[in-house]
Image (tube, rainbow, N blue to C red):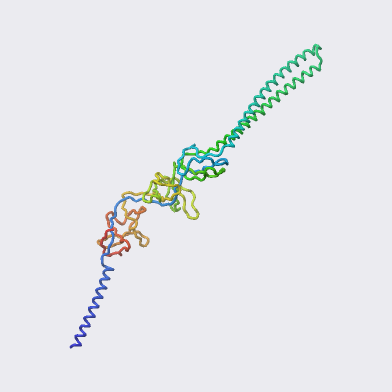
Length: 391
């Protein structure tokens, strides 16, 4: 009897242990395969989908120039600095002009001398013509007297010689006048040259703009091609952005765009495509797209980085869901939906794709509930019971 009771108790304890194990296993199986899982839910709504192509570039000015002297010299004044706005024709810098002023004065004196030479030549012509007239009259008088045998033939020869000499003096005076007039032209050109060089000592702004860099200081010796200042025109600024060549067929001039400057990452500014480069970089397979800036951030600088988002399509009042909710099976797009409290993957047709949302053109209707997994979790399998959790 005692041995029998002991065996019964042992069997009961073993059975109890197995019951606990089975219960735990059943609980685990239920939790893994049958218990409702937490999901986040969102209804399909109508909205606007904007397709964009993104590129990264830098802010540049369409018109930019380096201000440099036309002549060599010592920089005497530099009247503007970085950040200063300038107007067309404004004096920016001056070079030492002492030597050139003296050269201008010398050229002016030489021009005056040549003008005097012209006047003197004109007087010589008048005198030579008067002498020639007298010589001709004298020759005619002697010629009449020869007929009456009053004078000898030798006097006629002398009169003829005096006439010829007087006429030669006229030609010589005329040639001297021509030479003097050519000297005037040469002296005038020389004066003009030195006046131009003197004017080149004053460096002025070629257009209205902004000084973005100052490279020299007063006292420096500068030569042609030496950059003193860099000036840009603020009439047209754009972001020159690099875009992948695969997007080339979707882009066109005047397309609207958004610009996000890294100095103001929380706001986007308006722009539009101004120019498309006809050349692709052979290494990166990207090409340049210039996007004009309609509004600048409060603080900006030429060369600063920015992202551009060029709008290539826009659909309004269409069914849309966030892109993150779309999942793929065998190359087909779909959404996980709530089917009577159970998860079910539903194939859908996608339309225009935006940066954050996507258009749904078929397979699901507006108002239908789409589910997603909470952060760090995975989507439930088809047929799994679900319960909603606030996202």
